[in-house]
Length: 69
Ligand SMILES: [Zn+2]
Image 1 (cartoon, protein in one colour):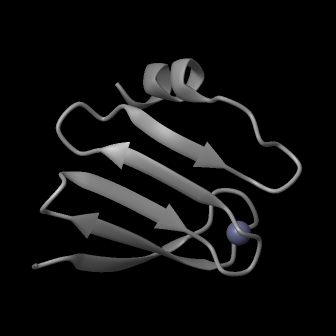
Image 2 (cartoon, rainbow, N blue to C red; image 1 turned 180 degrees about the vertical axis):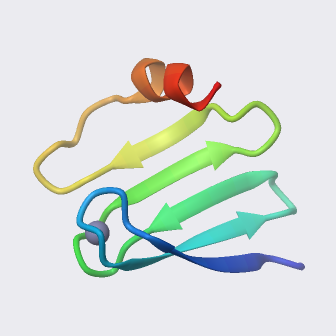
């Protein structure tokens, strides 16, 4: 259980947010307490597993995985 937490700026609202590197499951979870933004990525492939932002709850898998490459 060696999760790393990194402070980042929320891509949705620009407030301080957190990115958790979950080594066990090889996932990265980005979450913002200010606006409820959430994104979960696979660290091996960079693919978006789940993405949520208030008001724009859409399936971003295809869009974002293209950006991340
Ligand atoms: Zn935010």
